[in-house]
Length: 615
Image (cartoon, rainbow, N blue to C red; front, side, top):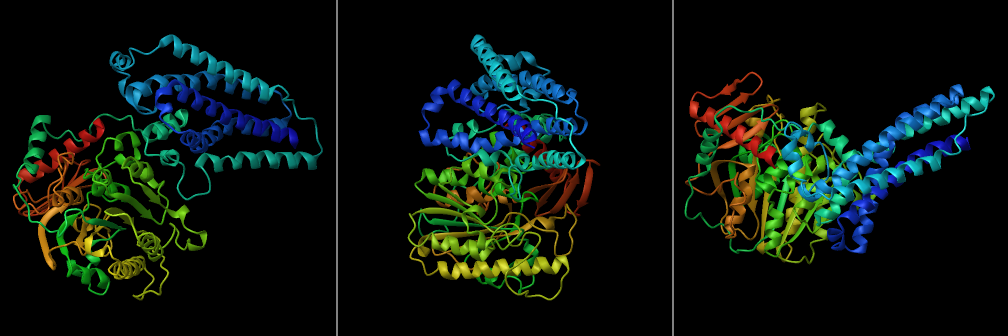
């Protein structure tokens, strides 16, 4: 038994330690950037990066652990020799990746992934980006790491021997142990027991990008990137001539007014930005839905400004996050938030307000590692991120984490005497599947649509409870509350995937900082339009949010663009058109939709995805 454990754990921890050494070499190679980190931050680089090291060490251990299992079963040395060959073949390849990354990071500013595959057909350009690389130093480091790896493996494998013959009982025990060790690798591979498997977000901990990047395990990153096929650089939406497409999109954003109506009593209000999970307009009484589902939202609509014709830019939470906080369009077959090196290039509302002196925080009852949301928020320079792990395990009463009323209670508890002005983002989760709620069901029925309806009602209950308490706070009179959904929902009615009604969502501004009340804005707009609408109210520039317009601008072109799986929708006062890229024809086209609107939708799809590829 000891011999089996010695082989397995020795091999696993050999790779783990080797990757930690590689990380130390990376920090030394980039000593200038490392010097800007505190000793505590350097320690965290290793600590946070360890989880990814363990994950890739586990990937590398799967085949050897199976070979160890066969060696126990058949008592043949050949299986141990195969492990040695496997290791000696992998070492030069992995060391090459680590060495290439050392210099490419200097040139590109992100850790090595599948991106170089984009340039295999243009090797001259790829080499040009590293033309000044210290080749001899890199060669020396390659040899050094390779020797360390070879010597390290020889050290841990020097006493490996063929298992002696055993009785049936002992053999059965050894086989079960070996099989258990193979199965156990699943835990480090996925990064632990948590609901969301390991991704780049899990090594992000700092507002300093270099510290976050240093924690990434390069071989893991390359593998992960290849599996996601992020190396695709061909735009599949080449509908029009590029210049024509860009001109049509620019035309959509060109009309602008010199000034817009002022809605605020103060120029620097606190901002409570509440993102409501799956909050479709179809269940909002103030937007034409049944009045009994959202009584609190309906009442708040009378106290603020309700935007009647707002559409989600996509159909997933992480996509809506980028549209709302960065004013950036959604990609149909992927999401920019899943690629941290791209989100680093996006503007964010949080960083813009932080520049103005705002204290910034983000509250979520689930795991921020989901879909790389955490890395996106860190890139947005939030001062504080609070998630599931920051709550007591006793409060874990939902599949996703903690229910909305507990989340709102935590926000209130930490805003008794907050630094002002503040920008606090709160993201609810209880109206997400499986729709379990901590209060008795309001509406009878056990079907999925009724369950969603009850969860919707519960979030409205938690929201009303929170707003009532917030109104008693001294900061309320200087606070703007923004209520908006991350995306819509096919319920009620089981909308088709492309249906405009599935994407229509609520947007409401309320709070003591508002100078107007009981107002309805009918302009057609998108989630991407919210950030400039807020910033212009504060007298701030919005040029960095190029894919946005002001929802209060009477001269702006009223339209909303959204995407679904390999298709898009374009909504205007003339009606809506939805287009399927596979069949290359409209799915839905209202009678008033012009050919120009269809072409505008194609142009928007083409140029926005092209911009994503260039990030």
